[in-house]
Amino acid sequence: MAKAAAKASGSVTVEQIGSPIRREAAQRATLVGLGLNKLRRRSTLPDTPEVRGMIHAVRHLVRVVDGQ
Image (cartoon, rainbow, N blue to C red; front, side, top):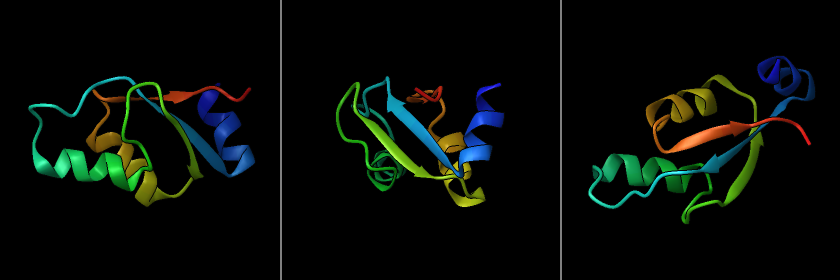
């Protein structure tokens, strides 16, 4: 349901739930690219295949937030 709501609005909101400490540099860079740098921070991004791929690459560090 959350994916359908995100696609309908054309944006996706992600929240950082994991720390990039002791992670590969590429994963840290992906978090920065998503606009995240501290725990519990949220970022709203356009729902594109590129952004979805970045979310998939760090799926253990972020979660997609339902529309609020």
